[in-house]
Length: 55
Image (spheres, rainbow, N blue to C red):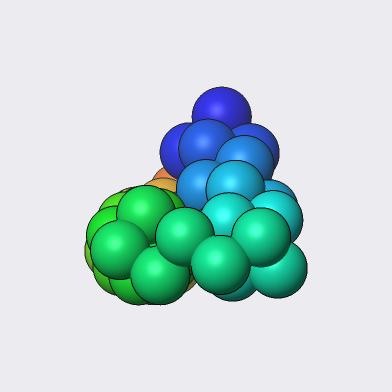
């Protein structure tokens, strides 16, 4: 879910950049970067503390 929001903001940034809305494009790109970093951090935490099968 978080990754889809990051991709959505990335697409908004690209489209805004194409049409010349520099402020909107910069803000959307910044939000996409932040969401992607949060996604990566949560993904790594879930890999480390994920469910393990008993031995």
